[in-house]
Length: 208
Image 1 (tube, rainbow, N blue to C red):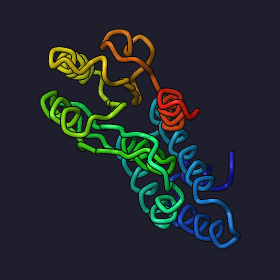
Image 2 (image 1 turned 90 degrees about the horizontal axis):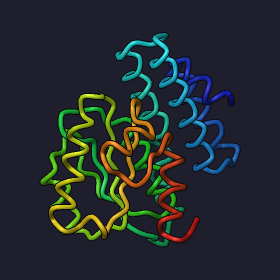
Image 3 (image 1 turned 90 degrees about the vertical axis):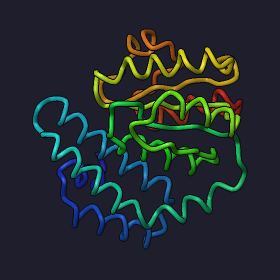
């Protein structure tokens, strides 16, 4: 565990922000720094799942992530010149959590994948419309609530009913999501972490 990941995991905002600035000044790659922050968010998530952290601390951790990663965003976008493909991304209906989704969006963009971010509480019709409009190779669905699993399933069924299912690879992830969830909702890939999502996306696009 790096010092930056530990600082974020411990919810030490001042330390996390300072360490990002220090690492940038030392010439570390922005993507490597972002991956340290992601490890820190994973630690926050693990502590939430174990009951050590409450929801308020989980949300605070995501807020620290956003603040600490802000100096990296422009640099990361500058690194990714060639567009490898397109991902339509959103947190499904009945779920308003966005920090996991935002991490995925940031890492995907850093790796040259265009992201169409639909936001949170996204219904099936918005996913279908975005697929028709942007013609992505990938669709990513996130949720943090088990009660949103059915919305995820309904969205995938709607994509199939619209005749679009065989045109996209559907990735699912989020705190309570696992391989059983993937099978239940009818998705193609389960991604435990944002980096797993990037790896899966690159495989689908033939560059990983």
